[in-house]
Image 1 (tube, rainbow, N blue to C red):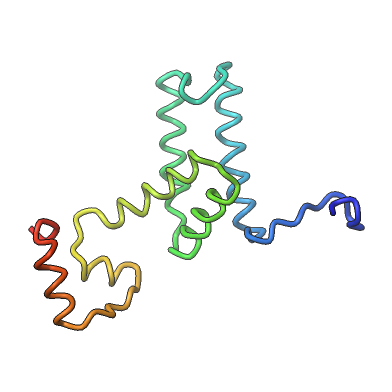
Image 2 (image 1 turned 90 degrees about the horizontal axis):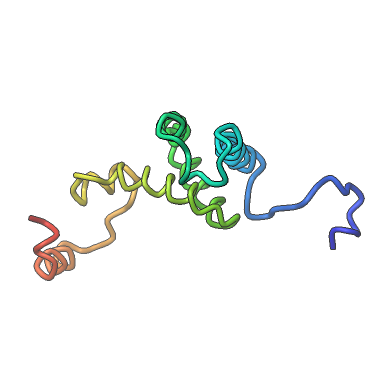
Length: 132
């Protein structure tokens, strides 16, 4: 229990590393501050200029630099139930995949192809629409 802990200022989050939690909290603070500064009750009501500025900040935030950090942010947003952050980071992954073939996607995410040539041919045959 929390009461049993010697340091009452700490709350353990076993599923989120400290640096990832800090990034997550930075994102939350930026979004909360934008809403407060605009004098609205939610992001959906932000004026166009503030919304554009926040979207620009989000784009820079999502360019985290490495895939490990990107996927850790996805896991943290999911674990902490921060839907908008989860959506942003998943969109970042989707954009990384967009327009790429299976081999390019495997190379991008360092995924080993564990299909035999016969299995891969069968999958391609069954899902021809995906390879057009």
